[in-house]
Image 1 (cartoon, helix red, strand yellow):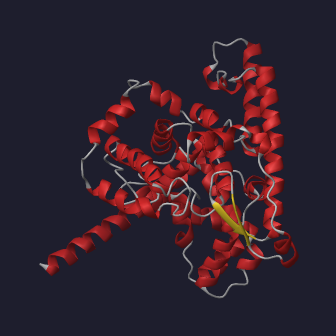
Image 2 (image 1 turned 180 degrees about the vertical axis):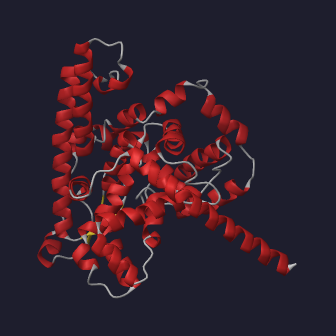
Amino acid sequence: MYGTLSKRDLALELQSQIPILRPSIHSRRANLTVKFQDLYGFTVEGNVDDVNVLNEVREKVREQGRVWWALEASKGANWYLQPEISNGIALKSSLKISALANAITLKRLIRKGIPPVLRPKVWFSLSGAAKKKSTVPESYYNDLIKAVEGKVTAATRQIDHDLPRTFPGHPWLDTPEGHAALRRVLVGYSFRDSDVGYCQGLNYVAALLLLVMKTEEDAFWMLAVLLENVLVNDCYTTNLSGCHVEQRVFKDLLTKNCPGIAAHLEALEFDVSLVATEWFLCLFSKSLPSETTLRVWDILFYEGAKVLFHVALAIFKMKEDELLLTHHVGDVINVLQRTTHELFDPDDLLTVAFDKIGSMTTTTLSKQRKKQEPAVMAELDQRLRRLNSLKMEDK
């Protein structure tokens, strides 16, 4: 997908040969801003300290890769796909214990990061994408793309408008080949699920999936399982009702976990949705460095959407002292944007996300969503009636 296959495979398969980033001697002396490409082809801009952090991160990737390879050697290539405990009623006790041990090991490993070379296979299996793909004919994706070729809808027009604005300057995504692949995935899905169609934000998500997965078709199925199983319903429908609910839930969680920040932001009349809407719609792909984003996605595809709340809260928590000194809405936005763009070490973020933020379960989040839904739907209904009233006045 990214560049030629040989370039992409070379970048991913030869993990042990990830280059060490070395800024010029002039940059080191003057601590000037330097630019370099990350593993997925994105241009990163930072200072020499950032380069050093990225080098440390890449060394951790190598170490983590050795752990995964050792497990594959001792337990088998697909050890993480052994029966889950919930499905193991008929399993012998020894197998249940083995499955439990694997589940504990897997959760810990995933939170430390899946090696890029294994990421496509692990994501595709654990997310449910492989199972979803297996329920339809093998030619489903190719047949879908052929069937929708040349068709024009509101969704396809918006997709065509957004293609050149999706990670501009990327060496593969911002090329005719990259645009064509991204368009096929997005248009194909817009016809698969007409309720979603296309929503801005999905272009960034699908683009990053294309860079990670082995094939365009696999990227399509990852997008499908993400929207249909991993995330909550209606996040990307026309009225974005699901996204509005998530924002209300997040605001409540911020008040609970960071009461000082929440009170200060309320005094400034700062609405957290000003920044968090993009975080949730783009799954941090526009905000965090790519390698940090993908570490978040490692957990997202295994543990579910709760990780988005953990990470969003962690970003605020990490900059609590600085945020409490802000006096204007613009200052808050600047602090948060700078913070996200400079989070080159995923462990810094994820340590706070899971060690400093209170635990939350999928069940608890579901209850909080149901609590917020009536208010969101009433607000959206009122907004629609007001819009229709304005249209009637214009006639």
